[in-house]
Length: 489
Image (cartoon, rainbow, N blue to C red; front, side, top):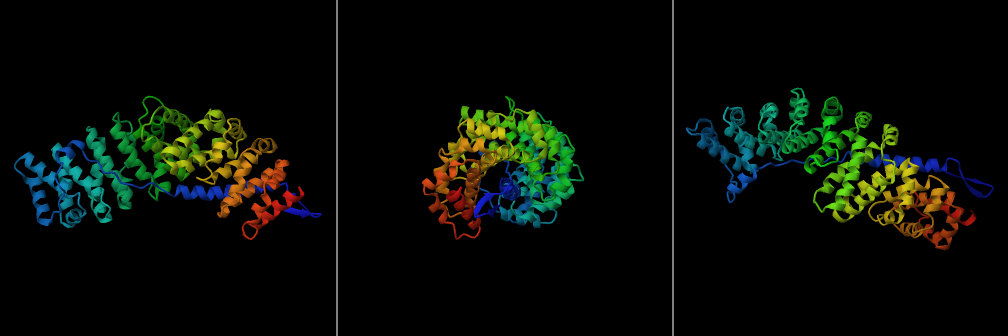
């Protein structure tokens, strides 16, 4: 990176570019790791009215004889109430893992339950579906796979008229989908993607939220990039998802959270992000970011951080796509509003959910990586000092500062000295070699573009700070280069 000539160290022409490439490689590896961290979970849907009515009823462990008795009564009971009551008792028992194991070992139990699910008695259908839902929530894969005969019926009922029943079927399918490849293998050729695309036009918010959950589970499957996401992208689902994420009075937080995660998983797959951008994903997420910043200033409503996370991730990942550069110029994403909104969100997350701060900083990194205008906004809004306060949270702050410094002398002049010098002296005292390495990269850029930086560094005991790392193999070359520049210019 630096060549010796006539006893002097001179920067090579490619110095800045090499620094940029090194950081981009590191960021690419970190983005890949973040993409692979999926959010797999299961949901348990229980009717609040039923829960209150059954308050005090303890879920007991049932043996084979009791389960057989309940199934017999549910099938052949003389009265509707008796049949329904048998299924209610069975459902309570199925809340216990021990009863679940006994149930699936019992020959014909699932077949009987599926028979009740497909009966022409609405109340029996609903209770049978609730029993299957309890089974779908099991952490035991054998219990989940035992539900396989019911999945095609659950899929069929998505086109029904009862929003409560559709919601229950969607949550049950979502639980089964995420656990079992066999379930996904059966449902894909049976048309689960078109069925979900039809559901997304429902006027019921509870159905839409359940749909978002089921779809997000499907999109997290390991085979999703090859076998699922192309079908989703070829359907009407993305356009409807983006409509449901449009800021405005009709935006529902629960629905938006689910579909923002869906969009995030599709973006992470990198199957066809150019298509998503042309459909307006970048614009929608950008506007949603601005809307979120306004919302956190207006309300203490818990849950906004749940939406912030997928929005920040999705927008950050889309900005790495080449197609985003052209579209970004057409959007109002290249102004100070975005940077100001992002810092409002960072402040909100610092108070409410500090673990999500790195997500916001990654977005800031991707905004400033190739955009002088965003770097200018960062400087003109006097946000360098607030940014430095987040150094203890994530060393992505240093990457952002490198993005600004590499834009040239005019930017370095605005960065230096300010509070940056004392912060860099502090980070050079860290034991983390990655943090120190990034600090050294930033110093290299500042020394290159801001002639007075090296002298100011010397006056603040900078050489002593560098000497701490002379023996660290990964840092030796950069430490020695900076020492020579500081001493000889």
